[in-house]
Length: 174
Image 1 (cartoon, rainbow, N blue to C red):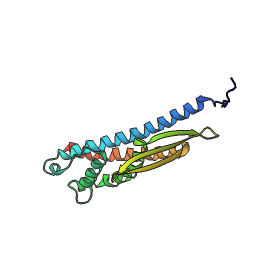
Image 2: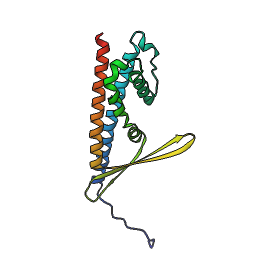
Image 3: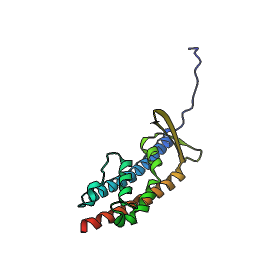
Image 4: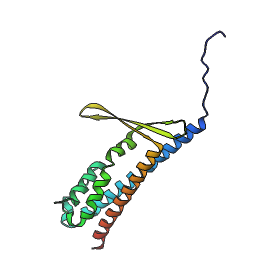
């Protein structure tokens, strides 16, 4: 029993577990906003694609980013639904500002840390392949900033879903 071993003081787990759970809940709320908004985009594409004549040329792609692009092209200037969709164009573009954040939230590997005040900090690392090479991205935020990010995301998501709901309603009425 003469082996030398280190003695490490274990910190209480409860604050770390609470921080991890709070960060996971925040991530879940962000993902929910994206999921609801993506569903609204898809529903809108389906409604527009069903419009006689004009909807036949509309593409219904599998990937989410391509669906946003297809809708943007359909309701944007020169699109088949430009007149009816002009109110939703800016809202859609505003929500697309969150695309990079969506990648971080959806595909990031998260580490949560605590500062001396008990506030959590989040580090998310994304490893992707771009043109056959590794691309490593890093997203770092702290609790107060994360709350502001979520509030902006919820506001933009709500505006988008409302604008697209009104657009779908116009075609369902006629």
